[in-house]
Length: 266
Image 1 (cartoon, one colour):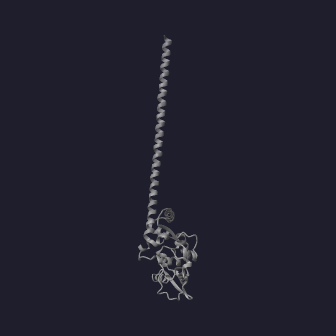
Image 2 (cartoon, helix red, strand yellow; image 1 turned 30 degrees about the horizontal axis):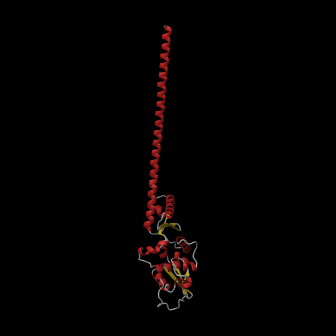
Image 3 (cartoon, helix red, strand yellow; image 1 turned 120 degrees about the horizontal axis):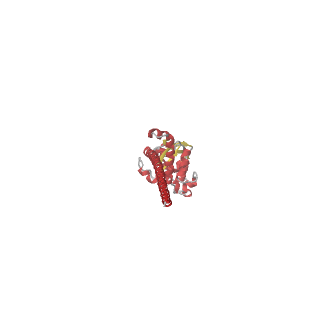
């Protein structure tokens, strides 16, 4: 009987020990889970805090980018990195990064605008292929298509003799050239029996082009989608340069000929 009681007591002690171990193990597990949850919450809090900081940085960057875009639009003339940095109170390095981002962004868009680099300055301008149609909306009134075509030839081939322009554009170019000179878009200097024609600073500013002739030509070639500076035949026959006449169909006319009664070619 005593043996039986001792056995029962041993079993109770064993069970009690197992129960106690179970409670201890459960408590340990709960404590570990609690510690894990605390660590996760701390990590999550740090990530949220970091995310908010990144969001703020992105918002400031977007604001600066928009300010630069607005400045280029409002200025209507080339602006340097230094001017943008000073007036917008943005670091020069950031201005340079953001303006390059904007320039590539405009190239990727289907838009009539482009951000062009002119020397060490940048300007928002209309792509060359759209200037003809929208010129009538520009300040100072419309420039008729016939004048634009003649002006494009002069700009692409300057310095160019007036006699060659007449050859390419026909007798109507006499009136075109007079109009362009009167409106300050080209200059004419006497050279032999003819005149040498070049574009003016007003022309460069009006169309957002470099004042340096070679830079102007390169930009125009790029904007018109030409592979290289066009020769006389190209200028006389390609629509890309706004020229419709065929060189072989244009009668060469001397500047000494009486052209006042000859109908203008448009």
